[in-house]
Amino acid sequence: MIPALEQLVGSHHESTVKRGGEATQRFRMATRNLVRAICSQEKPLVLFLDDLQWADSSFLDLLYVLASDKVCKGLVLIGACRYEEVAHEDDLANFLRDLEDTSQTIVTPIETHNLPIWAVNDLVSDVLQMSQNRCKPLTRAIYKKTQGNILFVLKCLESLFDKKIMVPGEDGQWQWNCRDLRAWGDGVNNVTDLVRHKIKQLSSEDQMVLTIAACFGIEIDEYILSEILPETDVSGALDRSVESGLILDQASGHYKFVHDRVQQASYGLIRESDRAEFHLDLGQNLQKHLPEEDRDMHLFLILDQMFRGSSLLEDQDEKDKLAQLCLQAGEKATRSSDFKRASDYISCGIDLLSVRRWRDQYYLSLDLYNAGAEAKYCTAKYDDMDKYINEILSNTRTLRDKIRAYSTMLISLSARHKFKELFEVGFSVLEKLGEKFPAKSSLPRVLSEAVKTKWLLRNKTDDDILNLPDMCEPDKLDAMSILNIMCTSIFRGRRDMFPFVSFRMVQLTASTHKSMLKAIFRVKLSVFPF
Image (cartoon, rainbow, N blue to C red; front, top):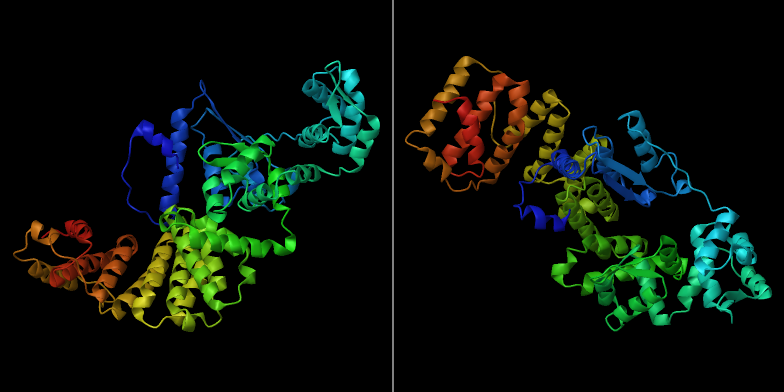
């Protein structure tokens, strides 16, 4: 998350991949502990977060952990958003209500307004280095158009200078003609008009660079633009845009629009009817021309562009390729513990499949629905998860194709403490895999399993067991996976059956002389030593 932090704490090894909520909780806890470590009441940390109206639920969940932390006394969070763009049911509105109602965190709203005319006059006077009285005619013309919007005021001053309506006089002071000022005012309606006019003063080539950059958001990556426009001087175009005050140079080939209104004005140069095709072309262009090693790094970027134009896809083969990209993006987001994004990508991929998906795109459908069920589990959307799992179980051809869905179902049942249903489903699947268990436990049966297990382990040392080659029988591997998922829940909810499960796992290991989970068996075996 913070690559530069490695310079302070050193490199680290990749930790074991955790499932679902466990990975999310670990990430949140690590972030919270980092913030606790770097701030205190004596040396507080102030975080200013702009444009929160665009924040997604994953970010807001992390922010909630930080804002509601009662241990951390030195953190001040300041968020900015456009109030008119936040509906009552939006994620941000729900986040703020939860923060106040659930965690009792103090939330202080600060509503900012447009500047009054006297403040605009102070600003104009300060910018032009002229007396306030002399600036009043100019201020009135600007205020009439801007109503005190600070960005609009500044852009109006730039426009007056660019159009030479405001010019330096012989006395070294700025001067203007009131008639020209009125004519200028008649042609200005909003800040977007001013910005768009400034963009159109650039060459057509530079305009195209800015327009394409705007399709990717407020951040600009010179490398990406160079791949899309290999015959264009992208670097020169960006430098000229910096000189025009439209973007900021953030070094190392990264730029940023000075304001989201500038980005919106640049994007507005594309006719609305052409935008879907424009985005689709950008995505396909990147997918085709980016080197393979960079394709995965920019997968989300590519997919977002292609999906914004997916409504134009008519050929099912093209839709299948896009669905495959959605699957890859979902798996990548899952590896980063961004399960909400993973769920969204997978859902989009499923929507792209044909009506006869289980006939024509069987394995792609299987992978998408399995990944979708896992993502829904990780976001606690259990009803949606159950729908995906039922779809898999109703349409798959073999038991082996159902195992991943059964595994997700068992994990979710355990998380919801539905042990009775877990045992019914789990033992039913094991029986189909050739591993039948008794309906009830009894001491003679336990002793019989113990003797059988001890016989299989005769003459085997610990080293012999640890050095066994991997199990390769598919049914046995699937059975071991199911048993491993069920084991902890059985110990909690059906302790009378726990010896049978533990003995069976050891028996499978010893009898086949092959296992991938030998460390697990040592733990299970230690509960019942011989």
